[in-house]
Structure formats: C-alpha cells, structure tokens
Image (cartoon, rainbow, N blue to C red; front, side, top):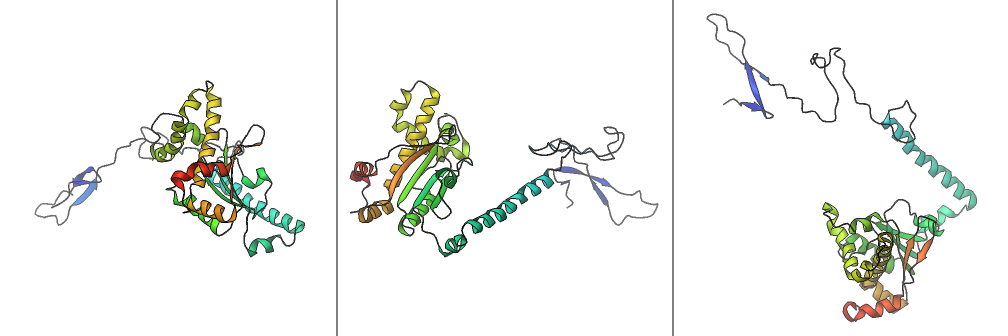
Length: 290
C-alpha cells in the first residue's frame, strides 16, 4: 500500500500520460511543497518571484556584539578572535609568574595544601582569589547559585568531604554577595520552573526568619538581610555535616566563616559567625560524633 502523506504533507501523484496501447511501469511521486511557516529565518529562493521579484536571497544580518566594529557583522569570527585572547593572557601570566618566582609552577605541580575552602556564588563578578589576595593553591573553591550548601547536593557534599578529610583545610568560608540574583528570585512568589527545587532552600531561610524580615519596611534592606541570613544558614548546614563535626572534635578545625561581598565598594563584611556556639546549638538534633 502506498503512503498517502510524507512529513505531514499530502503526496501529489503525477504520472506521465501513457501512449496508446502502452501501460506505464512506474509512477512518479512529487511531495507537496511545505508551506512557509515564518520564523526567524529571512531567506527567499528564486522560485518565489512574486514575493521577491529580483530572485535574490535575503539573508538576516545578526546584530553586532559590544566591541565589534560598526561595519562588522561576522559574529563567529569576532568570538573566535575574542576567545583567543585567553591563551595570550595565559602566556603572559605564566611568564610573569616565572619571572617573579622561578619555583612557582614546581610547587604547584607538587600538589595542593590549601588553608581555605571557599563556598561562593557562581556570579562572575566575585573571583575568590582576587578579592582576598590569595594565590593559586591557597583556596579550594566551590561555587553555585546563591552559595548554597544543600545536604542532597552530592557536588558540594563531596567538596566538603575532600577538603576536610584529605586537604585538611583550616577554614571554610561561605561568601555571599549583595545583589544576588538567586536570593532575589527566591523573594519573588512565582513559579521559576527548573529553579524551583533550588530556590526553595532559600525560601525556607525566609520562612525561618519571616518575622524579622517582614519587620524591615525597606525592600532593599530586607533583600540585603536575606542575603546575610542565607549565608548564616549555609554555615549552619556545613556545621551539620559529619565530616566537619568529626574533624573539629579531633583537630579543633576547620573554623566556619560567613562573609558578604559588597559590589559598591569591594569590601567584605564579616558576619561574625560563632562556630562553637552554632555547633552547640545544633548538636541536640544533629550531633554525629557519638
């Protein structure tokens, strides 16, 4: 049985007119032309002469990116060239490091023994080493949206386990920042799709401190305070882990710190997290050292 449709379109059956006394041995099928559904492509062929009498194809010109010359619309070429600068920067950085310290890369290749575990936000404006003056090899870094420490996130739990048990870090810093998009999204009572499970953890922080937050009339100040409280709760989540509790009981480290970075002046605010007090406050329920 011959199909009547291909690709959702009806088939047009065109057979050559048979000569008298001749029986055709085959049929020629010509699929119907797919209708033009529009979309972002703006290209016309020479067959649509009524819409484009000249018969020339119309090509959509992509918008220029910031930094491109006014008459340049070759976005792919610009991105390739712009990307290449990273390798040039790397060569310059490596040469500068060798000039300043000939043994720098020898020490890096020998292994790492950082003093700090940094749990920060994925925001591109907060490079941990640059804002603290740390060098390569001095901080083990984990970053995610809104600097969260969630017990079901095997990524951050694995980082904490490795940093505490194998690297023997002495400090764990949770660093948030004012103007955090993740915290702002959590303050918005609407469906965020795929982000919902992640943002719910920040919304839970709001629920815990609802009275304090709702008492702040100014929305911007309330937003900033939720950023701070979220950092404090993530510090508490780190204290709840068995790895940290066992290490602190045996070694008296790591020490947990809660910080917030301010874009307006580049300063870091220390939230003065008291780890011993925090540990004592959760051990009734979360004690994992017995």
